[in-house]
Image: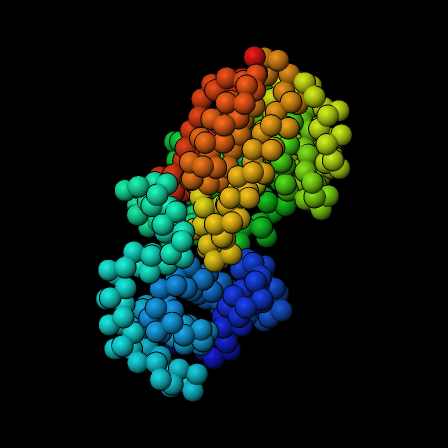
Length: 394
């Protein structure tokens, strides 16, 4: 592979913004590509994939450069680790490929370096998952698949797969996921006419199991209480065949505005959005819903392959605080479920303390619910990691 200074420099600039300015990797890369519209598809792919890969392996690459925080040196170490010859650029002076490769051999004997995670997170994961932690760490370091969810309000999986194939987008299916199409290679699907027509959404396969787990039926009154930009609300609308009422709540108005745009594109006509302005918003909805989805804030450990910069932004204190938030949401928002109705609590975490422990603690308070079913999807199963528990109100 021939390296170009301007493209490599763009990667280095991205790394500086991510690690020194604390910005999210996806936003940094998006801005970088927008500012340089002359770059072709191959150049854009190089910048995005190399940036993400260096973010993913940052601790390992620091180890290879003897702990230096020099983004040119770290980028050079990544090239060496990929057996890419370094050009004779001034920025790479002093970087010895033989030394880097020797350090790489040593790194393989230290798990938190080899798997490139903070030491505290490695300890936390090992305590939580035991012998399974290493397997999940390895899975979390793989590049995430691009998965589409077919919008069954407008089409079906076979028809959409044929349309995509005609547009040179090859996909495959997985029997575990009824509405999923998995891309054979990464492509910008947002420019496709089929996306603009609302025939699909981009949504990880594991995430696609949560809405069906809520067991919705046509004509029901359903609340998605932590809706965000609405990926699961859209899925619920499709499962309800646009019949019934789906109320999507969130504390951020901009997310609900985005959901409205997506709902129009998807033809999801039974969605109503409402901003949570305080406890009164929830109180007014007490005992009104047949189904409530609580896709709560969490550590995001199950989706590190998709958001590798998250592991450098996380802290033990944050995880402890988010567990308090989860418990509060469960306690307060569960009151919206009517007697005989059902509640699903879900996270994109693989930590028991954010999952089974939250449910056990909630039921232990005397809450009028019974656990009907729970399910964990692990990253080692091929997609993102999620937890979901379904409770029935007595």
